[in-house]
Length: 354
Image (tube, rainbow, N blue to C red; front, side):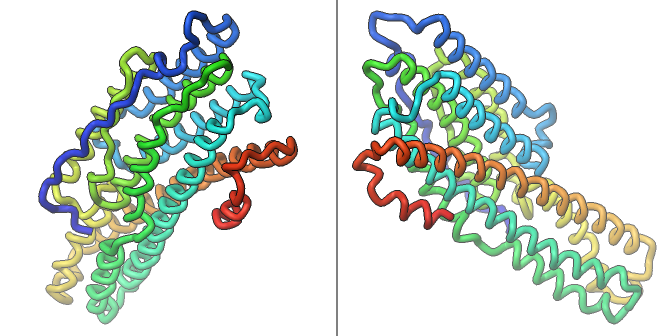
């Protein structure tokens, strides 16, 4: 999983229209209640994004920071669900274009969540290989020590392989970027509030997913640079997060590390110290340094395993939030008996997703 490679040009900034201009009622104001709901949602969005500005740049692309980012995404999607309830906007009042936007985005988010889960599974499989290496190193058998090099090579080869699902994330991200343009809302103040809130949620979602895609693919070509109207209450916080995180991620990639994931690179640093001693033979592996290196490898491997398990749980949690929200919308539409023409065949699609 060697990361050194020629520098690729940064992806262009994506510019989107001003959501205020797109969805504000012409010649009218939101009611105090609707304005209060929108302000509360956007203030909470700012607070959630603020948590992603790392106190230490070294935290970026650590599994704990990625867990925080995915938890934040889940919270934002729950906020949207709560807002829909508070708006008292039944699905029967949704315009077909709103439904299309929601369903198209949600299925792409399910696809990208599946890709992330498959990569975490692959990394966990690599951990099993590492456990086998540690078993040999802690066996006190010189014969086992001498055969460990091939096991280490297998571990590195496994982690250096490409994951086709993750490789496909670039296309999904491009589709999600295209979905950021909001449908126009003409006669529904509640609909305007919903679309504006969904815009903020979508921007945060697309950006965080791009960070994960970059980290898991080993390529910063998946890292997005998004610009939003600076009149939005959460725009400055989002810009701070994106600027800080993107700059550090690109710096990490430029260093040519074994992996851009902090805990995985720490494991490899321990392996790099052990490998020459294993190649040198019995004299080298009987020294105190060898025992200390094995101990360090055990500690870093356990930290990696715990981090992967924790991150897997929150990615799975995000998948379930998206899926249950999608299911709820489809069930409400079927119960109301007013399924739009654009939804013909979606039942089959749902079975495929499951």
